[in-house]
Image (tube, rainbow, N blue to C red):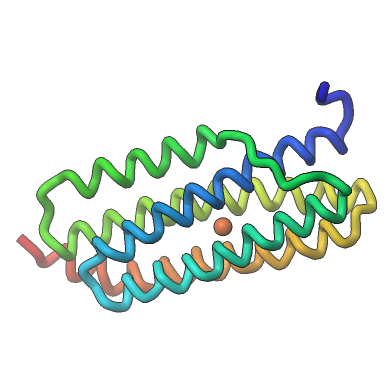
Length: 164
Ligand SMILES: [Fe+2]
C-alpha cells in the first residue's frame, strides 16, 4: 500500500500502535512484577487490563475500516521498553527503582497520547465516526493513567529522595 492519502496514513499509524500496545502488554507484566510499591504494582496491573481492552478497541477500529487487524513493528515503543528493561538490570534502591519505573512508564504514556491524539484528529477529519469514538476512549484512558502515575510519583519521589 502506498501512503498516498490521509486515510492510508491513519491505517499505518493504527498498525504501529496496535503492535505498540501488544509490546506494552508484555512490558507491563514485567514492570508489575518488579515494582516494590504495592500501589505501583497494582497501578501497572490495572493498566495492563486496560491495555488489553485498548488492543480490542483497535481491532474494532480495523473492523470498522473493513481491514484485518494487522500490526506493524513499532520501533518507538520497542526503544522505550528497551530502556525500561535496562533499568531493571541496574542495582538500585527499591524506592529509587520505583521512581525510575514511573519515569519509564510515563514516557510510554506520552508516546501513546501523541499517537492517539493524532489518530483522533485524523479520524475526525476523515469522518470516521466509529473509529474516532473508539480512539477517543483510549486517549482518555492514557491521559488518566499518566495523571495517576504523576500522583503516585509525588509520594514515591519523596521516598526515593530519602533512600540510600
Ligand atoms: Fe495503551
